[in-house]
Amino acid sequence: TKVVPKEFKVAISKVGLGDVELAGADVTVTKDGQEVDRWTSTTTSHELTLTEGTYVFHEISAPAGYKVVTDITFTVDKDGNVTVTNDTTTGTKTVVAGNKLVITDETITHSVEISKQNIAGENLASAKVTVTDKSGNVVTDVNGTKVEQFVTTKDNLKLQLPAGEYTFVEDAAPAGYDVVSTFKFTVDTNGKVTTTSTDAKTNGSVLTVVDQATKVVPKEFKVAISKVGLG
Image (cartoon, rainbow, N blue to C red; front, side, top):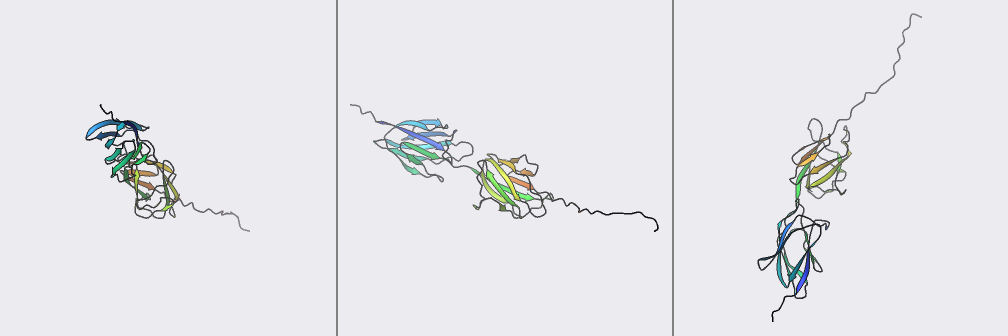
């Protein structure tokens, strides 16, 4: 009598940080070196029909802005229970939730620098600045310090940012300078910075924000002049 292997439904989710389903990943699942399924991820999990055995999840290419995960080995036992047996990913480890594997892609970040200068091109210290992402979260510098009312020095502010839109706020300008208007800037998937602000300029991954010197308005006084004759 031919024994028909028992089949089980197993779902695989490809997510980014925040557990948001990621579309556009090209992935395969193999068993004993043979391809069992290949698909491109969408905004919903992908369901496979698997039998008992050992499988390898392989990400051929990740969605734009994300790193490819290393291969993940998992097993399905005779009762359909799913277990991860090898996961060398450097970021968030694969999570098993019932019969679902949740695999997280790491975001690719880019080196971005922000320079505060005057119109002469000299770096300015003592400005207080805040940088937030599109969701309003304050970003951190390369040392892990939150860039919230961050006091600038004459060195460029160094950040590691994923592609996306950001907001620059100057909370306070250095003495003798005007505060620039709040503006947005964008980091693309190659790490290039762009902005439409007239108070800033960009060069590759460097954003230069220019403070204008405060105009000194001369104090005015009332002076009266009389023209009189003798007596």
